[in-house]
Image (cartoon, rainbow, N blue to C red; front, side):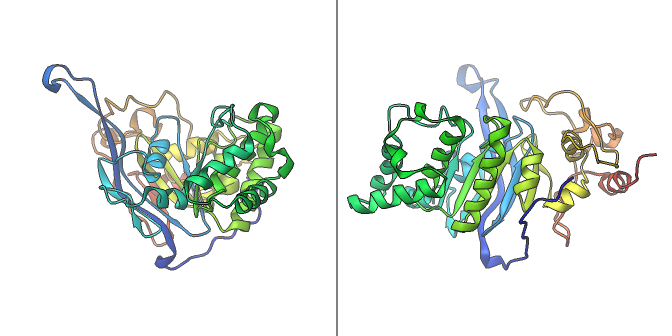
Length: 345
């Protein structure tokens, strides 16, 4: 695989941690008759630990239904976790301790997947960018105009285009507007939820490069949510792989892509078109299990070509981070890493 450009990963002290997620769980009660009898629990997220340091991009990957967006909504304060603790730039945002909701919005913002649905078709670009500023106490007309014009230039649009409506822009331009809206309050963390999946292939690279440029220019930290590991490889410093509500592997991007230790991660990487790949990686079939009725033992065992009897009865080991920053939830991880490094005959 190609090596992502302009990648700078360095160890930072703990006081440079901008986001800490500990034992995050989000459960939803489903169904239930009279007096709640028969009610079942959907464990959308079940014990997730994450860390993000200033200036880093954390890639959060997995199939649809793995819990990625639920984690994001919890960090944004839009979902109340069942348990766990989220500390965002020193501010606890769980257990009713989020404090000033506006202050939280000034810390973290989101770029949505669909640039067509995420913009109000009845508002001009100027109104779309002005409204957050006014809500957060910016009332001086000259300051609002300056910040809107500056942000439009940051995302590659002209200030004179601010009087137009969303339907007058292309898909790529609409996503630039969505990015400008997310950045207009000068947040420190931006969550990008599949920001290029709804765009034409020819436009995706432009938006990815814009996000990387803004990250360096404005000193941002990103959480990049995607099922496309090609995008994650290009952008991320740290990668966390989710499966059925849990992290099954995380570590530095090079470790994840060059030495994947979980069969699910190997299967995701094998799906990336790469004619130069020499090492055989695992493939998988079937669909994500029903989260209301998860399989016994390791959740991935019904789809894993390496699963043994023990895997079907014993949950995967605890996700413990090694000295090199790599962690995996799989009983056979060591032998699978070794096998993945053997060249094909």
